[in-house]
Length: 322
Image 1 (spheres, one colour):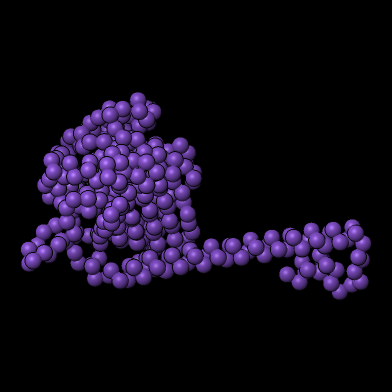
Image 2 (cartoon, one colour):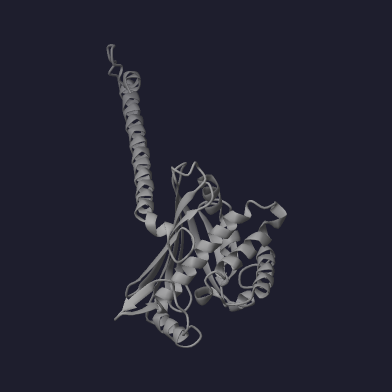
């Protein structure tokens, strides 16, 4: 800093206060202020990243017993909340994969689509670019084969907010959804676990969307008919009677779980030869959902695999809406 000041302001020697020198000095002052501003911004960003990573590690510590013993049979905690106009699901999980692999997978738009398509309701996923920011063109539909024109298309703006050696945060946001829903958000945050010798990662997956009157009515119609028997994972205890959460909370919990299982299946598939990875992750995702048949069973394995292979082939060549 002293060297920069001395060069700009002639410290240690007689100053030459000519107009030319004054202009040079003012220019140097502006450069110095800009440099200090950049340094301050970088320091603030680093501090914010460290704070977010610490907060996620603190969350892992608070969930230690729950992650070790639960009804899922895996290191996972799932929760949900519903307000008057929004429903949110949160999954916290220990991934059996190094942070470097998790980070490179979740911040890459193409790889993210490779795992999003595993979800039974995802009919199409294709990024506009393999860099952040990107837009993911995603179509959702029924749990059976559909033409793209019969599905709902959403445009997720994908941004990698933080990507460092100790923390990752990726966000996907879509303003408009089907049936009166809006402001879809998927947030992925991950941090390496320090006591796992670099082999495990702690993940926070948040999935949420907003709804208005039309969205509420559409969901109520679904829950009164095809979705009447659908439940989530959170156990309730009302008047001594145990039951599972249902309705919109149940729906968001099921979808949050499906996205988490897609991440887990994708990471698992990276251990296989390149030519076999697609089949490995498809089978892994379906087999994982079968561990929770009451909440997640929708079809048989052969039907799922055939449908997904056709959808993956279609998204490689077709445009949304075709």
